[in-house]
Length: 187
Length: 218
Image 1 (cartoon, chains in turn cyan, brown):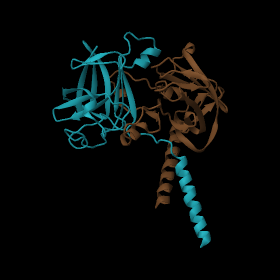
Image 2 (cartoon, rainbow over the protein chains, first blue to last red; image 1 turned 90 degrees about the vertical axis):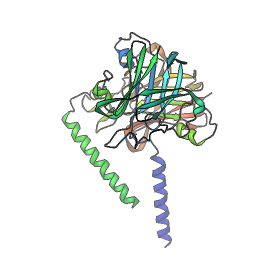
Image 3 (cartoon, each protein chain N blue to C red; image 1 turned 120 degrees about the vertical axis):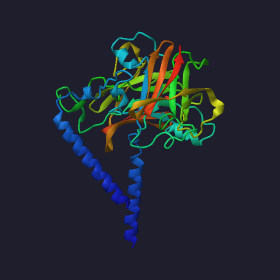
Image 4 (cartoon, rainbow over the protein chains, first blue to last red; image 1 turned 90 degrees about the horizontal axis):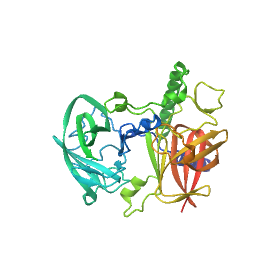
């Protein structure tokens, strides 16, 4: 009996020990990615092809559709979403810009979104380094802007964000599933 | 039940490794490093729309800062953050000398970006000291020159490049660190912070190697 107890204790300890050592983070299910404006800035840099200064960078995680119904089910209409997965999405401006005619000073911000059937409300918030939208606080909003949705025929499996040049600056293109929208940024 | 689950995971992992090795045989003539050099193309390109082979990740100090912040009222600012990509062993040798040309990821003595894709970026939200050199609050890239038993870790200010676009004149601080043994093999390159008496350590682990970089927070 005493032996059995010892053996069980030993197994318990070795189990906890193994647990303590394997604390290293696993690979994320929704991996992180980042996009720059100018588009592919780090690649242009090593090719000595930079023609415009660095303006913006977005860091986000990429959930996948995986056969699920995304809009209205996985993402409830009218509820704040972190615009990605894991950590809330971070956008950084390396210069002052304007969104919806509101000045956005150089610096790091967190992006959220409220999805609806025909438009999304994009939110730029001043509280950085957060996880999810659990502690989202409207008080820290810098701006909100409503963006109409476009339908796309081709399905985007992994949520994606990237910048595209426009006449007045750039659009942050956001796409997932059958939906796409452009957030205009002026600089 | 628990043991069964672990056994199952073990079997799945070894099956995965077997597959990975198998796949490797077919294309082992391709220099390994070029395989992780997927260069993204324009916005509408399908390459950009797919998930990276070596996905990006980030670690904070204090560890798990964004989650901690959710449950801790009035939490102080973070101290450090690293953004890196996570290449996988995939049955390959991580480091070897330059005579080995097949199935190797990186040669000893050559600069390595400490990850994959974009150069690894480290940001300090407070001034720190590395190997007696003061580094101001701000953002740096960090890279490595691996050698058997020893890694040289270098901090540099040439930010936002794909791979290493080395400008040695922008090196700020470096430190030689001994390579320690891990008990378990780590398939994915991993970086994370741990607290220490002087601030924090940046722990870097891959395969059976582990390297600890001490950071003094001023």
